[in-house]
Image (cartoon, rainbow, N blue to C red):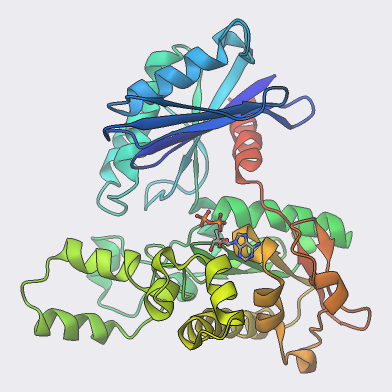
Length: 402
Ligand code: ADP
């Protein structure tokens, strides 16, 4: 039984095809630069190494068309008939106030998704285009939406509400939603297995540190708080996002530069801030930041310290509210691959029973492993995330319940 996972961004469509008998990814790739002069199609299978071709792709429908044709290719394809695909799982960044768990797509669901456009205008319209494209290309195959916000729906009201007038919550649905839920859920299940604790008994702090970063407090396998908020802008200092700042800073900027539009402000806070802004390294790529810091660049060092300090603050806050944890998980690009970041975040926390073993932490390898010292009360783990596999599993689960 095969599941196709699709992730439609503003100018790209990523896909992974899983064989669910052994939960193995058998084909994957992406079409990028959709709508630009030149687009690219990168694809790979278990047996065919990566091939990159340039093409012209006007919209998401054409991108999905290329992918499906390729999957069906007589020589290099991975399926002979679209009926081999049991279900398509779509990654959706924001479920807004309409969706709290994965759902099978029908007309009502599509209508509800459209109503959530205003909460995540940069993502949801592209997801919608992808859903419609897949429906056309794979008629009769059910689609499931898996939301990045869903795993966080168990937060108590005192954690998800903002202390602003209630009408903004009641009418405009302004509250903390949290993101990266699929990743936090995947590593929670993995960590529980590594610790040999049933998932519904495990208490963890999961640190998803990538270009976008979020930290989540897990009590008995469920989310009780998370660092991202109404949007992914809140929480830690990130690659190009500012993370938590005093909201009055925004009021101040708007008062000082009254011609600034909401789009420009959004761009400033989401794309021109964070590690990139502080270090001066475009994009805020952590590998470049670390290299510059190790070569003595003070601005890079400050950016690195700010990211790690913001992570440490969330780690310690959640340690307190959880009142005891079984483990800490590091995942995603930085969490899996940066020993320096992991060491810095956990530095000086031995009083809390958190001690990293230098030799276990040191290799720049994303291999799943424990990195805590033998006398550390709290187990610290590196777990490579696998959001696509989680989406495939959840999509199949929804299909089986149907
Ligand atoms: P996204 O949020 O886009 O999914 P990723 O999870 O892929 O991001 O993480 C990207 C980040 O991980 C980048 O900042 C990148 O520099 C960082 N990263 C990847 N490999 C390493 C490494 N070996 N050392 C330090 N940082 C790394």
